[in-house]
Image (tube, rainbow, N blue to C red):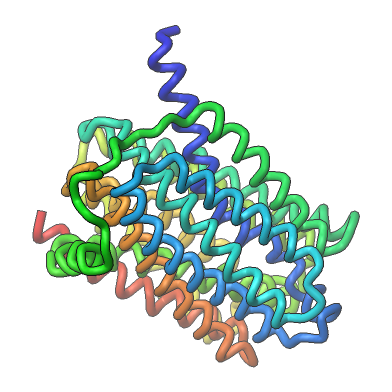
Length: 394
């Protein structure tokens, strides 16, 4: 087999693994949230806020690390982010109250943000523009193994050794990733030492990116789709176990079924990219979110809550493909020396809006099913509007 193909495949798998840090940090402890609330003497709202604080720290980390990587290069900053993630994950094992857990999750998110933004920026450095859409879709297929495995690993860890062991597993994953990145990932961008890095340049770059209607529409389309999915992630542990009556293991398995749907739709997306423009596919994919959102609210209002699970699968299955198309389209518009800033801004907007989404679900947690389905519909509508708008600009 051609050595360059092997090298590219290895790079793709390792970079996908670092992007998956976010999914592991978010999804792995979801089955344990009710148990954690009991042991730490916290309410469900307080535990759901650990998701919101994670999203906030995630955004801040990306906005800081993105421009730094455009100036200093990717490799050292990626390694420092993985190390920060590992240390704070280990510290979470010893949290004795929700205040400590919130602080540690915030710092854990800073390191995670560096991992995610650096991996995507490095992908833009490595792969030529003509391959970017397919490579982003392939990366998302590899990355989807994380949300498939994370809740299952979390549920098994919870049953065998308690919720604190979940953060021990996260620490181990980070240390393994550190080894592979250190050994196999080279520097992918020549540092820009001719241009001074200061806050004014960083803000100017972000301002220029936000001033483009094409940029902001693509970013908001991805952000709204992700926010709808995270409304599900924030509400599902309580809706599935307390409203629908599933056990923690059953919840983990049902959560994983969403990833099967994601894999099918993303594989279909790879095929359809050979025949249709990404902008057209994003319109179809956001339309599926809108349709599923309407169905979810309707089923909840009429009391047919058993239909929530298949409609959630329909909704979540299309998010990954839509975001892969959107990110590739966005990165394709910009040179590699802006890839870090572009990726940082796009993903930080996604998770910033996701923090709003999970906060809304937490605010109305007295009726978790209504809160989850209502917020999913809201962001499904917004994603569809943005997708239609960006298609008209294409």
